Length: 117
Image (tube, rainbow, N blue to C red; front, side):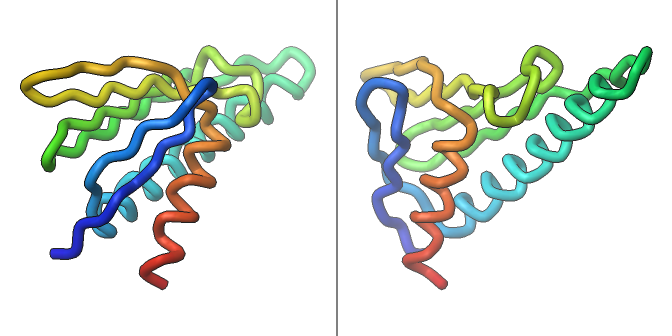
């Protein structure tokens, strides 16, 4: 299994970790489903008098050299472009919990996967 460095760009700074292409594709799928949920919510809110059906939160987990968790509750964001995700990256020595812009994380995943296309 091929493992290479995956860089997540944060609001301020970035973090890099070992990541597999398969794990990246799984995260890409989870983010795609999250975008669909966000678009469904945004579409319902634009209809007069319509209430959006609550969507399930997205939670992705990966365990490799480090543990990565990406979480987002789509019900709190007005548009997909405003959405942020909560990222937790930890191992036995350090734990980092921060936010990242959803659109930037999608770009990071796409850029990482271009190496394997």
